[in-house]
Length: 332
Ligand SMILES: [Zn+2]
Ligand SMILES: [Zn+2]
Image (cartoon, rainbow, N blue to C red):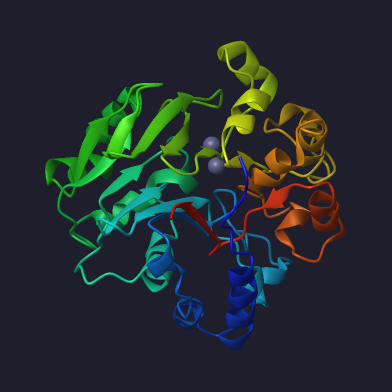
């Protein structure tokens, strides 16, 4: 329940690195790797991206400030779980920016292993920002061998029967592992990952979130959801109760409020708003609110900017905002 090991100062290192390496993404990742936390923590979570599927700068948005300022780049949402004790690494989501995100991971948590050094992938659903990075596992790029890809049954069927994904399965670049809702997958004697069904647009797959439980700290990852009211109808555990049981809850913060998409009726557009979630969770204890890390920002969401008034408001109300390169120690 208590946030013990979060190291926000790495964000400062990241920001500094971004300024120094403004012309070079690889230099950006390399300059973050000067810390030693990976040697001090047995099992940790790392944020590799915090943006919505389209990221930022956003396609067709010539006015996006991230075109001119690489510090403002938003990669789509992804987490890595690193078990340093066994030198194993797992990805939550494979985004279109996976190449750079894996480079960041390798800089943060160097390994002597060759190749991708990824021991498994967990995917929430088949929307482009969450799974299409799988394409880089194929023969055109990494030529990976049998990377376990954990998906729900309908998602597995979609990957088996539609190109280009079926080629990855056929050539055994990936090995599909079918999950069941609420059935824990064990990664180590003291680490499990449990998928939880989430209400969302399910065109090609189910949608899940993940509960990551360890003998130390626990985390919840729900990057995409239509609404918490719909969750309530689907699930017997209220979200307030669930976030109270974990140390960190990475929750869908696609939009800040209803004023972000001028000319569009936002009442028609799903996703909980940050302003509504701050009300919903307002009565929870300080430690629980601080463990809530908003993630999956649309390019229009002002909390993508560290200095915005909305960012200050969220932090002042005791909530967290996930940033790329942040580390969360789960087991010492
Ligand atoms: Zn998404
Ligand atoms: Zn989605």
